[in-house]
Figure 1 (cartoon, protein in one colour):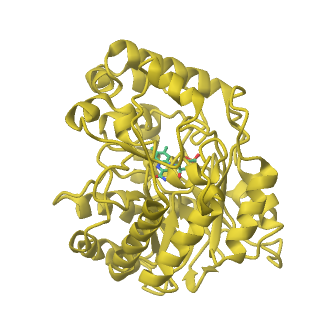
Figure 2: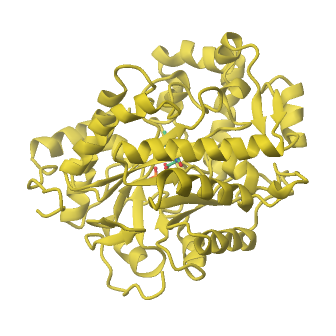
Length: 443
Ligand SMILES: Cc1cc2nc3c(=O)[nH]c(=O)nc-3n(C[C@H](O)[C@H](O)[C@H](O)COP(=O)(O)O)c2cc1C
């Protein structure tokens, strides 16, 4: 953001829209798999409160689905279509505020990337499920469908249905704001419906939504109508890391222009991310999760999710290939963030492989205005205390053993014993303790 002094540090406050954050560290959105059952609030508290207690300024609750049916990309995602349910989440937002932190919820819809496309057992239980599609799916996905790797049942949305979907985002934002959420984050990447609108790989429409930014503008209008001036943030994808056989994708130039348009259209902050056109390891770069794939207790779950042992083995093989393919440079989104920051005057948020406090401070001076971490919070739920109070490095080694088990409905947690042991030692030494903070964030 123009004018940010180079000596900006992690512990400095910042505003997003009208909301003041006590510092520039955020917990990136991670699926909590909290569902919509009676334990949902408890699950969210277990997942998110430790980060707030440890001083993290902004917590992004993971993707929640805006519609009553379909659109879930993974098992046990939470839906925010029901005002009575969302109202109950005020117990969560109150508790986060008690620690002086802020909480934004991420709103999402999977579109083509819904469970009915990839999850075998889900398909059996929902034989009539279709996937909301921006356009006819691209050739490579149709071939994968014919080969039996995925099950495409696209329903290409009419113009009226696209507006209805934007309204569903607005309604969920309204309920969330009533429940005390401080802001709305949109799941603009990870092959969700927003990326599908933005991407020329998926969007071949001939109505006003041929320009995918129009969908984000329709969502903005619906959010403003239902939730007033609540801060509105979105991930902005660039698809340059896509596999070589994908010829049409968002280029850096196109994505920077999308970011510029969104900022000037009233989006309050942007999270630029380099992702593939697919839902793959471009989002969570790191090692091949050998331990997670080998776990005896998960084999049945993998077979159930992926449609039998040999398909599970194919997914495992693809997972291995991707872990080698994607560049794992810590802070891999920083260059793209810098390019976006040059053309917008709203805060730019950087996440992806960041692990060291000193690195975060350097990026804050040059590439972004806030820094976020995702997987490190699985390894150390109270990581904020170590990062904010000292020149520390997160324990997470991006081994990804936390990621694959989620396909079976398992909760996200660090599953690497050496790291879990290190955290236990640090806990014993009291390094995660912080003085109590007040509502205003004072220590
Ligand atoms: C298990 C898991 C779930 C995730 N869920 C979401 C999500 O709901 N929404 C989203 O935008 N990103 C999601 N991400 C991506 C993270 O927000 C983050 O960009 C990514 O993990 C890279 O940051 P890290 O290296 O600090 O983990 C998820 C990542 C992981 C590992």
